[in-house]
Image (cartoon, rainbow, N blue to C red; front, side):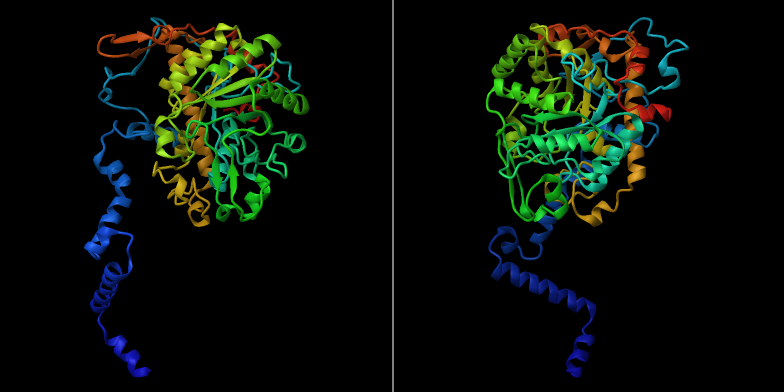
Length: 524
């Protein structure tokens, strides 16, 4: 035995390398049958698969130009990173964007912009920009809520994102007066770090799930009573990434912690159906909304990606007839989001945000219902220019998901669905999560939101307005095509936004239902 060990010890390192490569070649040729390339080109063929695996990163850093990547190009990512770090996010030597390109946005500035008076709230709080409407005011909910920020964190669940990422987001919104949507994975301890929360549930009813997989009103009432951070409730009808499709959470990913939060069994696959058990018709949905509002006292809204509008018309007609209905509506764009989906869904099912929102908003406006509803936009709107367009079209708030992820370290690796997120944001692997410094990342989320609001407010003032809710559709122009060239939003989408009953920023500042007040008390 000793002689054999001595023999192995005498083998030089390069011989060990050759032996290893020989074993790989034998395995490639005689044993593995799955990969043609590695069978026909043993050892060398593995280089092809390795290069393919790092292809997105190679293109992102060395091949693609500043403006051509999707879903977010280098300029957009760099602006978010710089804004979150409070670094210089300016450009020099003019824009490198093709301003004659289809759908390019132009915001019309006034000859003399809005001048902030000395006693104005924005003098002391330069990032103060709350929602101009109050959720639940029209329906006289017991606990109405005015979002303290016009930009907020969209629905991303614990399980989809890591514990460290969720905690960073929640601490971040607490620092800047925004709200944090839980996503459909239930309310976790990481959502309860001081920020306002909108509790969101879908067809799986996680967190408010009965034994048979249905909805439990008793569990929801207990959840709301025990967690005053919950300011509103959102029912997900569909989402931009995969509208009309349910989800599967593999049993291997369900830890005891996730099982407790979601109300499911450890180690057992959980299938979310494509439709709800609690209702199957529009009248039943309306009754469901009212029963939740009655039991909890909170504003209740719905979220959907837009395709056919016949049921939206039915909902609007029923709201007009009964005087009841959702307090807010979140319109998700078909551009997709953090949720993984087959390309057939992500590429083709549901309308992009601008098309979907314009259809739904206009039909509610035609029936005189827009004043009672807070409209929330979600779909790559986390940039001031796009936000101006959204507000001109009728949005009252904006939810951001991927932009918020980037502010806390996401590098757009596009492996969210593999549990191998290199930045630790979209993974349950503890080692990768350890790279997230929660206090630092929460500061960056807060700074991104503050920078966003500051620049959006400057654009608003340049257009001659005090608050973004005052934007009109003819304040924003878009390039249409080579024949029609460019036109305002009113001409392109065929409706004129209903103006919000806005008094002043001071009126919003003094509102008793204003959210995010701890951030104001600390002086934003």
